[in-house]
Image 1 (cartoon, helix red, strand yellow):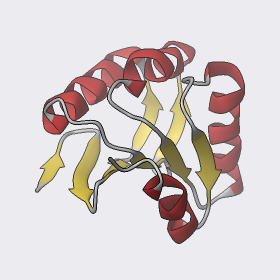
Image 2: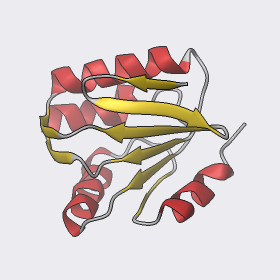
Image 3: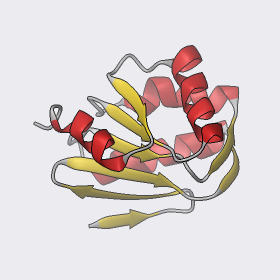
Image 4: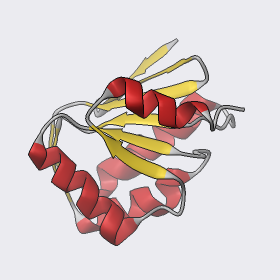
Length: 123
């Protein structure tokens, strides 16, 4: 099953939640709250490691990043951030440096490596 919203696409495959941001100029707090609420509803109280593709993000507000690190990590045992550009790697590294969610989290530019990291967190 796949879930489409205004800001993201989500689906579960082999025990991993795939989360792909849609093109967003600036992710603000209100959008982050909507994203998290939609994800939690989609997960239906089931915990999944998450492969989060951030390639469509442009910027993230400070408030949104803080919210994602706290409430956004609910029901997520581990996160792989998938990015394909230097800009998005810096965006991910900045998030980790200032807003680490207290969960195992790594940044990858290779999908297979990102999935390998997450497999050990599948229940």
